[in-house]
Image (cartoon, rainbow, N blue to C red; front, top):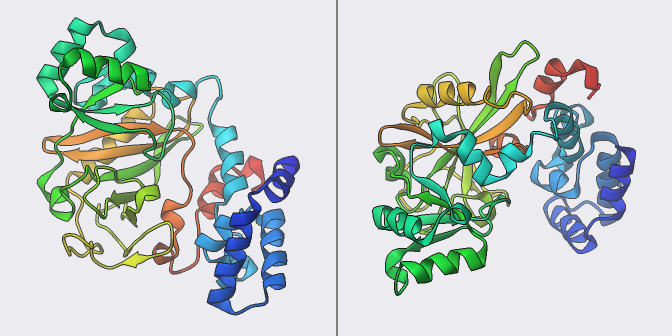
Length: 337
């Protein structure tokens, strides 16, 4: 882990590192040299990357608060402890995942490499418009939304998908009308993170909901979406929404619906679904589930074994400046986090 810290410090992209220093300098007016050494200090003591420092606003915190945050290196350590590397491909590879978790997908899915042209014709004529995803990867990268009407015929579409290697095919989900009221242009998903404890009990660690903020079909934070924390008991959004760049929204920029106080429909059912799904591959003890609330109930979109640690710890959502580390220290005392 010491080697990883050194690699993080000395193998970083220095352009973005100094951009962070300049950004923090503009906000705080502190000398850049002080900010530089504080970032390095946080990397060594808390395992925080310079993006952690900026996004979590470490420059506004004392050491006690900083130590409660789950950071880049701490997250890596936890994932490597909880998730058996020999089983992670079941979650990472979308084709394998779809086969293993078929019960929870509640939509037509297929692998282009396993379909003949005739079978593809049947699939696409039934669904007309589909999402095509790379076998591996995240953050919405490489995903295309394709319609049969975009091509001359089924064979042209079939060859296009095979050539682009975006062979995981999924029918478009129709989301619950309450979720569509906030943003109808994309499927707005929750991220619920589960941990399988040593006694095989499953706990939902935290939950956030992501909403696209444009007319794009992706709700990913890297594409300008916002996330807001969910009260795990009630399913109600408990704070304003925020982008990963620090922009805070009280209301959705398209629909003007207020985030805080919004009730996620069928939240209890979604929570029970992921707790059940978490035991399908218990060797991967921590999974971040992307869940859509469909018209007839919750739907698993995908699972993430390398769980993003930033969602729940954004400044607008942690006004008390307490991150996720108290939970993980209690769960994993043997790691001495």
